[in-house]
Image (cartoon, rainbow, N blue to C red):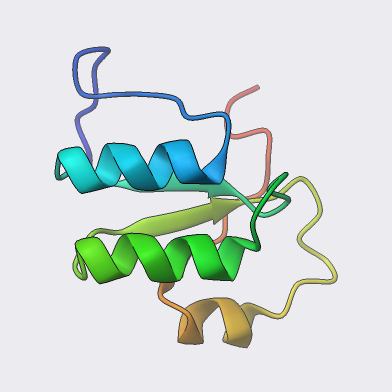
Amino acid sequence: MYDLNEEDSLVAEKEMVAIDLVRKKEYSIVLMDLQMPEMDVYEATNKILGLHPKIPTIVLSADTTNIDREKLESKGFRELPQKPLFS
């Protein structure tokens, strides 16, 4: 279980910002949306895991029906929860 608080959490609106944040500090977990605005989610994950190979990466999606779960797992994703996480 992850214990996150505001001091441990940052939100990056774009992929390169997230990659830069991970480059500067090792976080306990990375959550990403499947639909990313500037970079393919697989490429962004590859870059993040290249910096910190053991960091858990979890992709979120509102629609999980047409997603290739095997491809996600082969690229390093650990989980695929459906949004919204909390209702």
